[in-house]
Amino acid sequence: MAKEISVQTLQRLPLYLQYLKTLPPKGEKSISARALGEALGFGEIQVRKDLACVSDSGRPKTGYPAVELTRDIENFLGYDNVNDAVLVGAGRLGKALLSYEGFRAYGLNIVAAFDSSPEKCGGDESGKKILPFSKLQNLCQRMKIELGIITVPASEAQAVCDVLVGSGVKAIWNFAPTHLHVPEEVILKNENIAASLAVLSKSLAKSESQFLNPAAVNER
Amino acid sequence: MAKEISVQTLQRLPLYLQYLKTLPPKGEKSISARALGEALGFGEIQVRKDLACVSDSGRPKTGYPAVELTRDIENFLGYDNVNDAVLVGAGRLGKALLSYEGFRAYGLNIVAAFDSSPEKCGGDESGKKILPFSKLQNLCQRMKIELGIITVPASEAQAVCDVLVGSGVKAIWNFAPTHLHVPEEVILKNENIAASLAVLSKSLAKSESQFLNPAAVNER
DNA sequence: TAGATTGTTAATCGATTAACAATC
DNA sequence: TAGATTGTTAATCGATTAACAATC
Image (cartoon, rainbow over all chains, first blue to last red; front, side, top):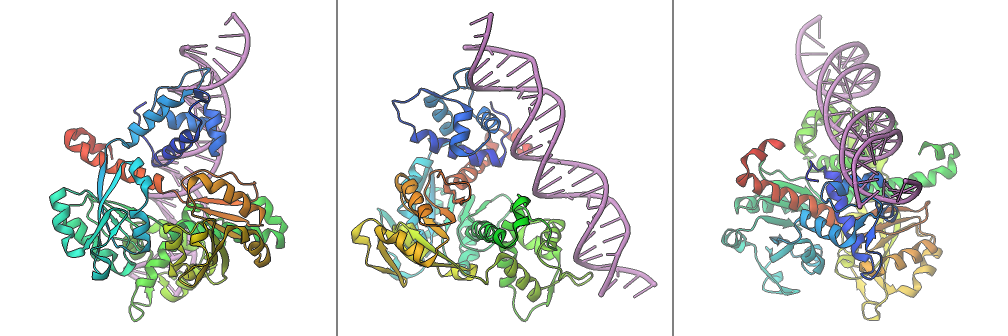
């Protein structure tokens, strides 16, 4: 374990974890790479390589003890130490994220939301306060917030991003459908709904055109 | 143009489009691969290769005419022909997607939402009706719906998925944090918020550990 | 024409898969 | 012990990048 880890592997780790949590606690104590791979649609070698990065709990003949493996993945992903975050943009998507209880399990704690429109402020969404945007900087600095979540319209996203960066935030999770510019040292992760949709609708279009053009079936 | 296209290229195409739409209509008529790449953080060769898959509007010396390039990408992505879809699960996330006007521009039309809890039904969210889950199959078959969007809790997602598949849906867009099993011919796209978050919080943790362990700075 | 920029062919890089030795 | 399953080293595959010819 403890080798370099690729982004691809990193993205698969939460999926293993997700699956492990669906296993009945009174079931088999261990699970093999092959079984995990079949459940998630990955090759067994890939599973072994992924897991070797974060755990040495694998045992020849028996596989991976579910409890240890779960603990090792959670440890690696840092689900035990909490990241405080702020969210900007209390529209529908913002509120959906605010009220999503599942983030807790991933070590993410949204401490408050901000919005520039007065009628959305003052309220309370699932126990999280919605504050005026003008108070963002002060709160971020006071609480040493490192992660900012952007759920404002695309037209406002860059301005919001700049304020977040100016408030000391070290990472931005951007749900606005636009590209943001950040200083080199700030981590930016774009959540990319149009890109996903493109893959999906293109596959759909292709599967339909096979009826018109049977030769296309073989193009994999 | 018209070569095989990789998933990576396909996912970048909407980003080029997004950027092209932010350009002032009265500005430069053409844009170079280098300029596009700098705006989005891609290499210029990658941009040229991506664009060559969908457009032959590129001109040596001048670059790509913005209007033609935009049209070619939109054409390729099929944003002009509409995909009807249903959404299952009228919780906060479901409602956020229902009310998102931007889908129209991507050729996606959510015709109705479904929910099993009676108190959510009968309502209307941004002009979209919320119907009882029991009516799902009939509507899908009658309207020949091909795309189903799942925004129910993880525990119900597989059951919902099975009903959608049984109703003739050919593609599933899954926002529930769980892996789904579908027949081979059905296209499945998982929207993977835990995976994104893993990448983000891991990068954040790494950037912090550099203070403790200066040698790590060079590990790229 | 000269120079900028495209598109394509070849080289590099990294991730996945295969082969196989190690081990419980 | 024999057999199943792990982890690692080598081979393959595909995407990115580099080099360069084509062209406006």
